[in-house]
Every structure is written in structure tokens, then in C-alpha cells.
Length: 170
Ligand code: S3P
Image (cartoon, rainbow, N blue to C red; front, side, top):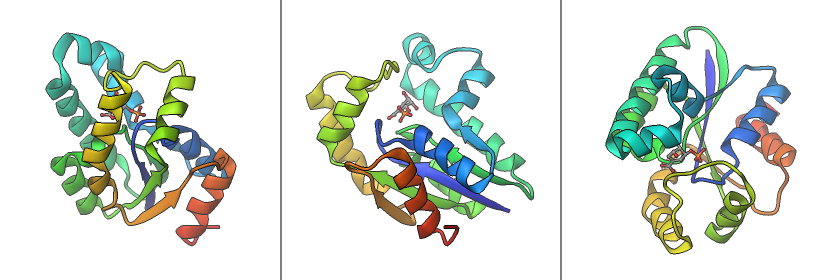
């Protein structure tokens, strides 16, 4: 069994790099946010709006627990949402499952530019100042991932190739 978990802030490219990496390795890809939406029958934005962040975090941990419980003997590439790797309960679940965590990093101004260019609704991206503050608060947690890959100025396939290489799967 082998699972690669991509972590990092909003705009890090976890989903797009995850898809490219899964194609490269021939492993299935999963986005944890998609599983949360399926389980809850609501969009991420709706969960935040109707129930608040604490409820979203509960749903996120439950979805992660479910996903890790299904791994069995499979191979998988998983993208976490930007806040998932910051929650101690999730980190404990990931440690227990002995998966490979990879932090996709970029300067915060580039992360902000990428998010602004996307149509995706992000309840925790409010103002540029708040976005930068949240990034600063979380960066130390992301640095606890086993591997850090700098993504600044690189295209998705280049980053996916670097991730594969850094895991000895290149
Ligand atoms: C969040 C990031 C989002 C999503 C939710 C909360 C966060 O995922 O999980 O809106 O706390 O940073 P992306 O990082 O894929 O945007």
C-alpha cells in the first residue's frame, strides 16, 4: 500500500498537481473536499455558510478517517483541503496511516494570485491581508510534512514530476 498526500495552502495546486501525479503514476486520485461534499450532500461553501467552520472541520476529519480506512492494499494520490493538515486530529490520523505527506509551497503573493484567477469559492479567502495572515499562521504546520516542493513559477506537470522523483517514484 502506498498513498501520497498533498498538503499546502489555498492555491498551492494540490488538486491539479494531484491529478497530474495520479496520471503519471497510474494511481487513482482523490480530493478530500469532494468526499466531504458527497458525504454531507452540500458544497463546501454551503457547509461554511450554514454550519460554520467548526462543523466543516468535523466533517473533514470524518471524511479523512473514512478515506484512510478504505486504503487497504491500494495505491492513491490524495489532495487535502488547505486547512486539513493544520488540525492535530488529522495529523494524528495521517501519522497512524503512515502515508507520505508532501507540502506544495509557494510565496503567499503567488498563492493569492492563483486563487484570484480561479472561479472556485473559498470561504476562508476574504481579504488579501487576512489571506496572508492565515498563511503565516499555518506555514509552520505545513513544514511538518515529510517533503517540501517549491512550486513557484513551475507548471503542474513539472511539479508532479518533482513530487514523483522526491518519493523515489520518478
Ligand atoms: C480551506 C481550503 C479549501 C477547503 C475549505 C477550507 C482552508 O480547500 O478545504 O474551503 O481551510 O484553507 P483548497 O485548499 O483546495 O482551496
